[in-house]
Image (cartoon, rainbow, N blue to C red; front, top):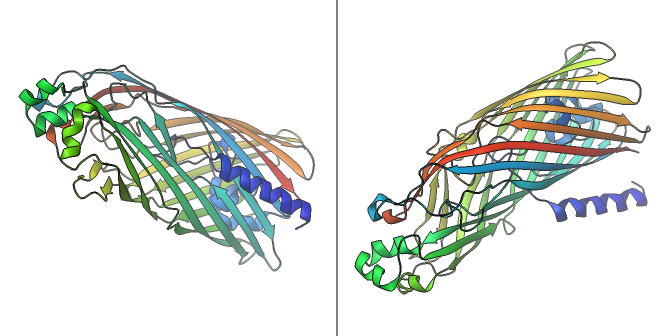
Length: 456
């Protein structure tokens, strides 16, 4: 690689790692936005298209189809709406079951997700590549006085995945690929703590009333942060690409589970009326540990060239979300009970269809639809941190071949989301803290993606 190419590579790598943000919009908190060329097709046929270096992520076997070295730099703007409407949220019946105070709120917002890929064709049918992307992400944030504050305020999960890959053309029809995934994860979770409800359990209503420690009137705060910087996690992925004939090919891709061992810190803000908790050795700032398993996935894709101007795409993908059965945080302080959220998520399927139309030698037009299942089993297991539901994609896009060296892809998707309903109760070893959040969300997602391909 030339000195100019090396400088460009280093600059782009710094940009990706330095600006990574996250947004939850795909199944669970998976991010399928790992390339912009496929965005206009709703990622239909992603494991079979293999038209640019983003194939490093979607199917490494596809690298054998690239004739020259290529860098792809992609960015995605994701706008989410998650507007909560309260429908009977209440404190624990053990302390009266009164309605939860606080306003409705919208946990949505705008986030950016960057990707970077490089592919180097080799001799004798070999190809090599590397991808840097964010396969999982979560970003929801509410005001700290909203009605569901005891369930969630801020939820932020960032991942950076470094994916060196290799591919080999085993025959004229068959290519095989494999990659290693080195993954970094950073997590922030926060919520309000009802020290009035806690006081009723610890000291009794009479004592708490005299000190002003009443339910919903003596809120504190808990903020948990952690990462796996001291123990980076790894997994691997495999791919196969097979040409049925000159017009049709199928792709099969699989990515392994990756288990993250997170270490971090818990910071507690305790109101004056909550001093009794500190005297009991709880809600004192402490270290924490958590183990999170991110799921395996598999995709089967089809690409069929109808004629010189039109190609049809199809895809079915599976994600093993049943690996995410609970979120448990363990504290170094032996007096602080574990924080536990039972998830009981289910495996999901995603189905997509798309088309690519060659308008002329400089322009491609793209379209696609997809149906993406939620892993959340029911309203009782839906949480304010991940208030997702099944979603239907409608996507459009275009590709502009500016020159032999430079190509620009742009894609847009709107995701239609049926109103997610929630009836979730806080899990706690202290029953008076078991507030229930009941209501529904008005939800939608818009995604705008763009990428630059550079052949050299």
